[in-house]
Image 1: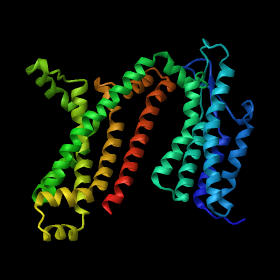
Image 2 (image 1 turned 120 degrees about the vertical axis):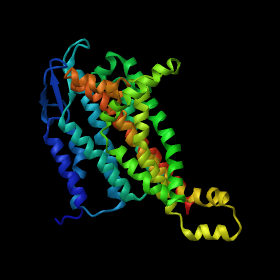
Image 3 (image 1 turned 30 degrees about the vertical axis):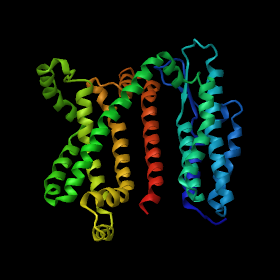
Amino acid sequence: MRLRNRVQLALALLLLAGLCSPLLSHAPNRLLSGQGLRLPALTGALWMIVPALPMLLSPWLRPSRRLRGLLALCAALLANGLLLQAGVEAARLSGDPDSLARTAFGAGFWLLQLAACLQLAESLRGLALAPPIRALIVCAACLPALALLAAGRLDALALLREYHNDPDVFRQALLRHLQLVGLSVLPAALLGAALGLAAFRRPRVEAWLFPILNTLQTIPSLALFALLIAPLAWLGRLWPQSGIAGVGLAPAVTALTLYSLLPMTHGTLAALRQVPAAARDSARGIGMSPWQIFHRVELPLALPVFIAGLRVTTVQAVGLAAVAALIGAGGFGAILFQGLSASAPDQVLLGVLPIVLLTLCCDAVFKLLASRLEPVRR
């Protein structure tokens, strides 16, 4: 048979690697390394061959909308079914709910989930659906996993057992992480938009502005956090009622805002530069004032690119906020670093996975917003 799709071949190889790797890992407690469990060792897990078979054969099949729809369905079934299988197997192996034994996800589980997610994305891209329809399909594909989580079918897994040890800590970490991102992205968006507009209006401002912002971006995050401790501690001593301190929220928000200025300023400048000069000339020709040109011509045309810059800024802030836990700012980074210090991989995962999910959600929301604004720009 002739190879018809190299992308599908890469996905099939990734899927095959996942099927051949340990899907789960079972250990007597949270600190000891577990024993890998492959596909034949799992009870009733051979059903995975059914949704995996079309994905393995797809590189040699003729592309069509029907095939892409089938592959999207198989990817969703594989991802959710694998999660259910892991929960059932963990409950069987743990037995007693008070048991110290832990069943965690293995390398094969992550490879299969990655292959399923990439297959779903590739199938939806090939179907060329409208962004809202794609978002609706992705949400529908995630509903079974959320239902399993809400029904408690996954509670025996090591990751969920780490969560149930102290759910209040997780909720506080979520609120603090969102607070760090919101308090840094909002001022960065306002200040970055103003700096980008100034650089667009006056080239001299651009000549000295971007070297400064580039220098800030090259400073390692932990070093920047440390540099802000002394001046903020001094300000805190001057104004004790302000709540400013050398560690905690203030230096974290300040550093994250400084890091967010470059992508936000650059995105604003790029958004204004891509506005056609003919549109400005036409608006000027019919007698619009400079404010009217900006408000009614430049801003609507620049908004989709500006949103793209805001998307990059937000995604970057979600990731960097984890490092702020090292100076007492909290967030999911606190859970992550506690797991590293205790050599508890599942606790590390409990801190890492929400950051990844938050990043993907922010990216998807801003992409959907930009796609909705694109007709306005046109």
